[in-house]
Image (cartoon, rainbow, N blue to C red; front, side, top):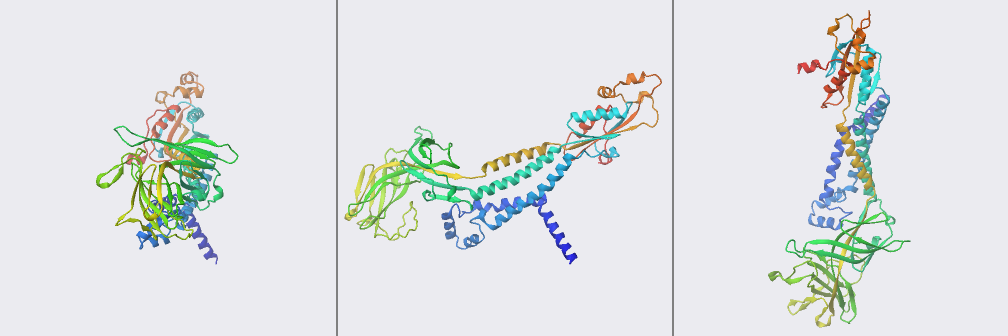
Amino acid sequence: MARRSAEVVGWLRFAWTTLTSMRTALILLLVLGIAAVPGSLLPQRPTNPVGVSGYLNDHPDVGPWLDRLGFFDVFGSVWFAAIYLLLFISLIGCILPRTATFLRELRAQPSPAPGRLTRLPGHTSGVVDVAGSAVLDAAEAHLRARRYRVRREADAVSAERGYLREAGNLVFHICLVTTLIGLAWGSLFSFRGTVIVVEGKAFSNTLTQYDEFGSGAAFGPSALSPFTIRLDRFDVQFETGPVDTGAARSFSAEVTVSEPGQADARHSLQVNAPLHLGGETVHLLGHGYAPVVTVKDGNGDVAFSGPVVFLPQDTNFRSGGVIKAPDARPERLAFEGVFLPTAVSGGADGMVSAFPDVLNPQLLLNVWTGPPKQETGRPENVYSLEKSGLTQLMDGDSPVSVGLAAGTGYKLPDGRGSISFDGWKRWTKLQISNTPGGLMVLASVMLAVLGMAVSLTVKPRRLFVRVGVVADEAPMDVLAEPDEALRDVAGSSLASRRATAGEHPPRTTISVAGLDRVEGRGGLTDEVAALASACGIGVTLAATEDEERS
């Protein structure tokens, strides 16, 4: 039993070590990126349910299997959440031990100098006639001036710098974790909806008012900020010159915003200037035309009256739409047609729009009739006509085609009613969205880039100085002449020591070496040379045995 328990513990330790290794974290990050690819290639049910239905109809063989595997809701699938959580755990498991090690290194002194500095790259040595303590004083002063952390011993000085490199690594990994948190926060609580508002109409920020709406799994309707936007006027200017004729030059939606407890406020909503209302952001996405029509049924009663949104189909705003009068009696009426802002003859193509602005508006319609339909409560697409139960109105052998200019009307044959084209209005498409965690993600990414830059530019380096006493006397003319800085630290110059009667100057051997903690860093030999010069010896650097062999 004890052996079996030890094996289980060993396997658990191995699994945890593997999961929290940096290699595993990088692999999981790559897998997460690959797993997100289907979310951009395939329609997603939370944001495009119509597209998902169309894909399933067009691909009856592979579509159901993709649906079972969660490819139509990638970011809400179990397997994507599993990868996400494993990456989260792996990063935290990497960060915590490294943070503890880094904090211990910050509190600890630099490593002591090795016994044989000649084994290190870029080493040099020499002999000076200054006391060893003075040499170590000069070395310590030089190193501290260059922002090294210094450890002083009786016969050696060791120094180290570059702690910010590990700090940059930790900042990068911590910011990666906070980025994942911000993305998860936004994915769970965010929402995005669009709505088309006609001039003179208003939109209230409630779920029932949206044309399209998508949200995260943890979103609740109570999170919507209470406000109302009324579109007073939409202004647009098109290019009329010979170059880029018809290109849009400016858009501006003049709106009135009503919020509880506040006075109504007027705003100008533009493409690159969204409104911020409560926690939501309101963007201007598009615009178009809404012909204003009046439909009377066969009994002479008004079955429908008001603007109808037509969707643009080309750059000149040739727009298609449907006018429905389900309450018309004795037969319900429906019209399928095209609105042309500037109608001209297109030859074989029929009537076309020659310019996106309204210069010669015309409404072209086909007429459909049918018996009254029982209300089922099932929603219908307002931009397309469900023709089941309807029959196209015919004039002899030809379909009835209605062409109306602004201010004109048409009586349907056989007393089925009439339709009049009363005018037109503009509409604008608004997007209302809220993505919490966006600022956290932005700040995390910026700090991660900063941390990576620090990690790539900081040079972690160690320098060492070791002194010793010369065993035998040597002529004075073979001793190295110390530099001015060393003489200042020692307290007296070489000449003053020689002038002291009956006293020989101290003779000290000095070894200087350095070590880079990261490969591929330049400048080590210059650092060692500068430290050797500060200690009073020459700057000719010896190579290690490995370097000589290479």
